[in-house]
Length: 395
Image (cartoon, rainbow, N blue to C red; front, side, top):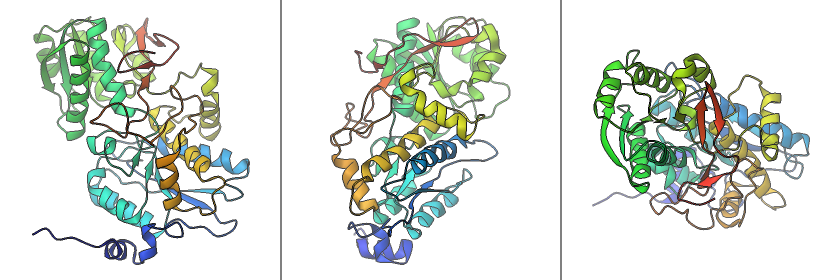
């Protein structure tokens, strides 16, 4: 017999108070006159192996601009940061802290442990807005509200481009962790949708300083293209090893896999590499608001899908709570679930909505199916086209 816990008891266990649940619009996240609307940026902001501090920068940049313009009907946005340090226990402590402090929402970030966190967030009624999707649960859980396509669209499109620009036989290099397996599955799906076949999946351990054995295995499959389900840093090393092994055909990965500094360092070795992105190019004037505010907040912070998700998440919360009589997590969830269009300020292919499931049945929380395709030529990453395209076909 399965043991169950009532919502009231779950809230008491999490936050010590039943009102932390947010199951009514006077519950979690309720704010008094002129008091702040508190949001929490969490995930791996810093750790020895993985660090994504740009998530906090994105939320802070948006909050500063929103507050300068008057906040949410006079209520300022307050950003609280909680670094999970790439530790599942710390990640759980962060969401428990969010429940105890009755934040209106979690915002942005990269988090490897969300499968363990959703029950706590659901019991507390706290949505996660603008999370950068890196696992299947984040693309399916009802409390997840990604503002961009993230990993799902970027790596799915990488698989498609590997076939379209290379040929039907594609080898995939991946890491040993579950998130990389999820990404490799997305690439495989993209390859299949373009009429290709995966000839093999080769593992290169995270942080491996010498991925040449994995590169030799990949090139040994005689592929028409190689796709990488890998992290930044590792992606650059794997690409270099593949090129030094004599493979000059297309290499494909999600945009964040290769930093601009990686491409500059690799020079001609990076040519013929395709990296689709889920956000608009910095040269697009429609997206200037994001890039301008990020530079003002921290000129050195990465302006990518991770920081964009946190930035858009913060703006979306302000947009959806504006004019509401109750500024609670329950109000926000209701507005997220019913709003016909959420403005993405030119950063995506159009406005998004969670009022109905996304276009991929297996990933219903992905509301934005659009990407910009990039190719590296002469050591420089440039858009293949200036307009967004759907990863499922069409403009």
